[in-house]
Length: 228
Figure (cartoon, rainbow, N blue to C red):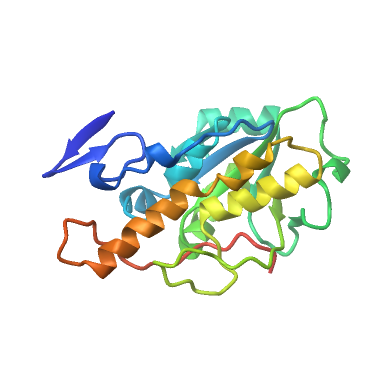
């Protein structure tokens, strides 16, 4: 589905301009774990190089909510009260899933659905979202370790270890697969970043040919989901 914003036609599915629509490169995968993406309103407006929407489209078992304070969000509160919930955030008390399997978390009820919240925002805005959303404070934090640098070539990273939302999600999926929590086939894992790679390729072409009809982009900070 497509819609018109101003004088530029846009895809209503990936929220990118039609000329740079990435939907054809998305091959959504199914997961046992449910993912809930909390997107800051500023990220929603940054349709040219945001990866939150691509992450949502790439995960069948996922939902995306836009906002800054989710304290009174009925669906999120219901999820927190009925599921085993974690939030991907590299705090000092976070469970490092690279070293500890979530199977080892004895405080969880194995009969409940596992949910991982993902924050799609810059570092400073993410901190504010966590401060304002009182219901998120009760969630256990998880983080991971990886030696893979971000491939977000069109963005200036605040630190070399920072990853985009979709790259961080892939790292989590790979770890959960290794732990036996997920059972995602190799082909799906290998193709998860296809829309991300194609988005980068398109933006690089825009840079190399600034006089074309390509969509411009602006560098911004990126959020780090890794263990610090």
